[in-house]
Image (tube, rainbow, N blue to C red; front, side, top):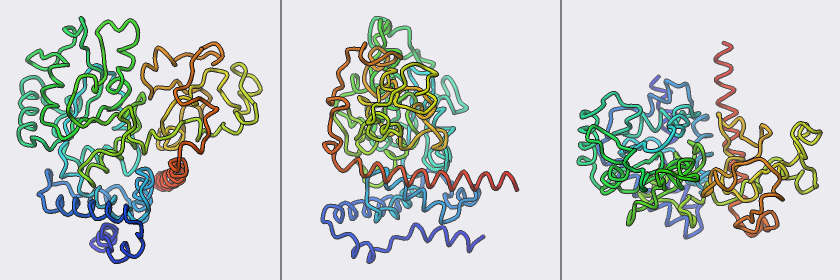
Length: 410
């Protein structure tokens, strides 16, 4: 057992001399050194819980090779060169130095469900066991005044240091009095403002928290909005989709652990590593679109042959997300993969604008980026990185799935 642990731990030892000879590029050299300094700073801190990351790896049956595949895939997802893989691996070990507070507001808890049902190394083990999850009212045992006391203690103990995850929209209209929380009956808006005040950064998870989602759909009786409409003067990261992919949540956390900063964001405050390219550009049915082969009606010959779903209302050409690469259910599949068009759930106002199944010619919607006529080259090298992400993540997922299957048969 001790020998196996030493082998696993060798993954987290960064050979600076080797990195120095391989880096070359001044930008990445500077970034690498800043990340190295940040991780050294975290290592000097006492962990916020006593859980041993190495023991979790051993308990789950992951060896060095399997974890290295995951770390490589996570590095590619963050659009970092391979030299950062040891830092990503080390950041995973140091996640118990970062306190997290998680709020649920006007939502269906789908993002928490996605988090708990994710694949490996299992996000519930990394995020809920390694990271110090100080408050998550859906998962915690205390309720009422006890829960309020725990939240207050976490806010005071980690003032200015905790990451605040927010799931669900915030009602700010005439109906906001219908939505209260806690023993004190605090409105969702007041609750969010109070907890966000001392957060290091706020991460809005899911379509509801980012852009209002389904609660904000017409006629929007509660005046539901996203987090960025309520919180001002604070770093905000939006991770939309319904639900958000756990891989993107982990990517944001890993970035924060390594750098102490939010990742590069687009104009809608979405991390570019996950939302920097369109679904259409990486869709497995793209070749059929280019060949003019479409599904004309459900169940026709085109549907049976996996033709493009554009005429059936697929919003892939106007939706930015990495669903086609990272996928869901242990990277097994995604909506278009099972024959249903994208409804654009990672875009603002998707329920009113995009959530229907009818030919795009009848929709009178112009894609915000010029639609399918937009040149792929104009989206930059991020597309090339996206391909690498797909290869890495699917390879890691296949290895994990195969290992688990073999164990089951044994």
